[in-house]
Length: 216
Length: 193
Ligand SMILES: [Zn+2]
Image 1 (tube, protein in one colour):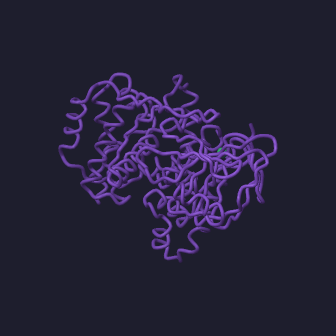
Image 2 (spheres, rainbow over the protein chains, first blue to last red):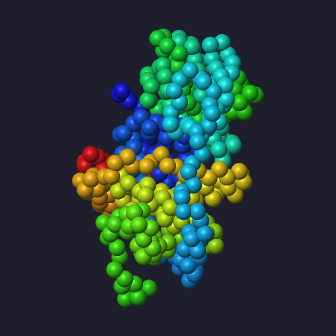
Image 3 (cartoon, rainbow over the protein chains, first blue to last red):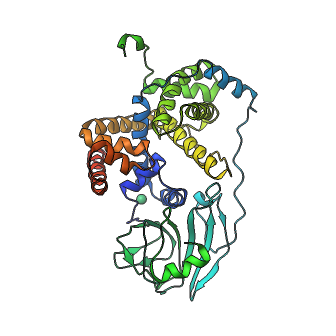
């Protein structure tokens, strides 16, 4: 699978520094699962963080911090707390990426003719604006713009807009300068995972459609 | 500060990897003490620099070091150096702490998905070490302004306004400066891909 659309350097840097919100971070993690090029790019940004740690001016520690830490370690059970098993998720007709295994995912709901959505909840980040969208083959989605960044990872099918064509594995970042009218490819339905950054709002018909139900 | 005071010999990247390995295999307390001596003051300094209060920074530092102890067996030296790995733990614990204070619905997950499948070969580790060295060199090659831009991105949740303040440039031009700095960094790094 050739991937043609990748997150920008800015976005990967923000993921590396921890500044990317939980919603966009989830979408990018899904992209990374299928993209070794971006995994390598992320590792390099994280290595900048390693350098920063190495060069950091030392902060004085409480004299007993090491002792207290060892005490806490000794009072802990020796086995690792294993992560909770994956959540039970509804069958949405596609295999969900590993990065989404802890998300609470709602069933498909009607959004418009040939157009469905499912709410994705991230534990610990109740306000993240993340959803899966499903459009019927050939569907014209309403034209829309956004006040901030929109991140979209194609999970199946294909999508195109004025700028390009997007296939499974592709990640599209659209900022406030992009006004687009995505069209679902003719061959099959398209499912994608989308996140809006922070207080980003959608303009246009899609915004009016989504806001009352989804809160976007 | 007087240079003579800090004449301790710093552990090399290879030594840090060996210490983590000793903790992972044998729960070696002496090795952990060395890791603690090296990382805890640096991690705390980093956390303070990102804006955490001194006391919170110390608590989170303790959590980071506990995670280092408990997750040492998941450290994969073919993917990242010890300092890079500790950085990602510090970053995650910091986010976790901020989210907990904001929403109080902490759902603390240990991400064990990164568990190495097979022990890395010496060659893998060498490739990783070279990559980290390249990143270090690339940073040193950036202009002061560009290095500042990249580094400030690690310290602030709203790096753009901090970058504007630090460099004395209007907020409106920060975005393009960040892009330029990252392009330059990428050019330096891509030579080696
Ligand atoms: Zn990619």
